[in-house]
Image (tube, rainbow, N blue to C red):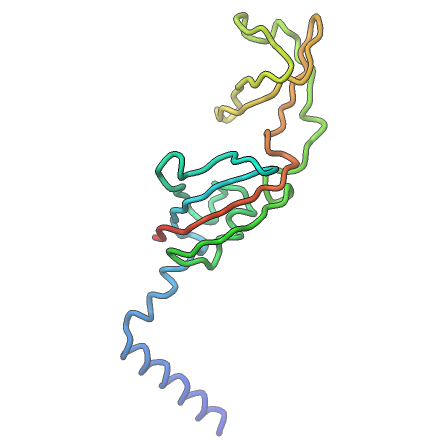
Length: 170
């Protein structure tokens, strides 16, 4: 009976606090969580080089948390952050763009390339996926009748280093 009385007192106290401080009910609205649409400023570095930054574009990255619009490790690191909060973190290849897949390196006959392209080792070309997304691919070898192309994401196998600031949560 004492436990029930103690629980009722705690619940009553919580209700009194919520009534006295109505803004305290919205604390969850200001925290990054699944289903929220958030905006973040970020800088991505790999091997000490800046690869991408929303600061260069002048507009924050906006995405829906849990909708698989960014790499999983990036999203996981943001969960629980609040507006104005800053954080630095690393994302492993497994939580980023994946490990390098040797099966994604293929020889392509030169006659399958557009006529106006003269392939050179190191050249980056762009192709469309079956879903229509444009992705970069890298020429890693050129022979007389074929070109060896790496279809892996350029960041596959890399540890991603992020500096972020949450600027909005809806």
